[in-house]
Image (cartoon, rainbow, N blue to C red; front, side, top):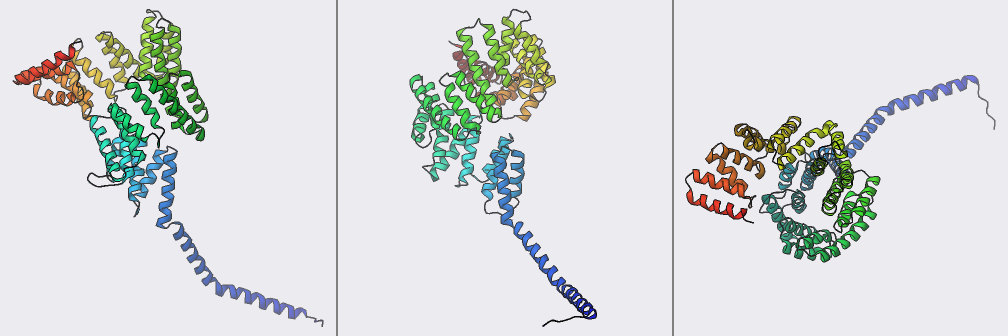
Length: 482
């Protein structure tokens, strides 16, 4: 059937449809808007739920720690600690790792101790972190090292087969030079942790057993070579591989390993270890061919290219300039070239001062150290040595030296080096009671220093403690005997 529609009919139909459609949507709009609003709220709540927020910050912190981005790792860790989380102990440890990465080791240890208290099992990963961090401090004092041992033994009391704790305990014995204990512990853990071979090598070197040392060095090199090949951009396995080769005196090979690592990824640890290798090469060259000044200069230049402020290499360079006989030879020209860089001026002044001191030229030593101090007044080593020179140089000015070392000790009260300097200056100024505290503090660390024991003898003599004075004087004299 064919239907014919008039124009009027079509216009009415169109108007009705339009009205119906608009009206329908107008009536439906409030309900749709409310629905969309609740959907958005649900999505936002889902995206910002406590669990999702925590997971996001955990990912941020862990990725930043892995990438050594300690600023962002710390920020993410601090935000995690503001959440009501069941994983607070792990978040505290993340913050401690971030602080340690930024160089704030003391604060990192204090933070980690919050979840590893004395007398309780605590968070075992935090105890391992504390021990590992302390053992990584190259000049950790005996009190710190004893703390590391305590934490490791607490871990092993709970988890006796913890290979991480066993390995670190072996490293602790190595640090305190208990070679027999280190040997036993490291050999025990070696099957589970083959990286122990590197420390076993150094233990056998200390025990004067070069054949066994070489055997363990070969095993260590093979292990770390494999690890470096698995993780080509990771710096630590490659560094340990290089160290294993260095222990076999394979200098060229050890440097090549580092160079290959630098081509893959820049890392300051490669440069630091390259300096160590060049330092050993310089010492070896001094023993083998001390008159070959050209070869030694080449080694020094190569080493200083990795770190132009390395004190050992600079001292060797300064001594080389003296061997040139006062003329402006290649070593002198190279030293001047380094000195043109403003960043190097303080350390070069310091090294020149210390070399002058070594030659007993105390007047020149003071001039150079003043130059170093003026350029780097916050360097405690420079300030300490200059303070000592003020006290015992020519002319002496112990009061000025004491004023300088007071500020250093105020910033580093636990340093036996700075405390001994202050004690010696107090002796010079005849302030006997004040000197006792510093000298006795230093005596616990410097057990073989005749100058320190002589000063203690003098102090106790002045304080009327004659018998104690005699004991210290006898000890000082016994140390001076060949």
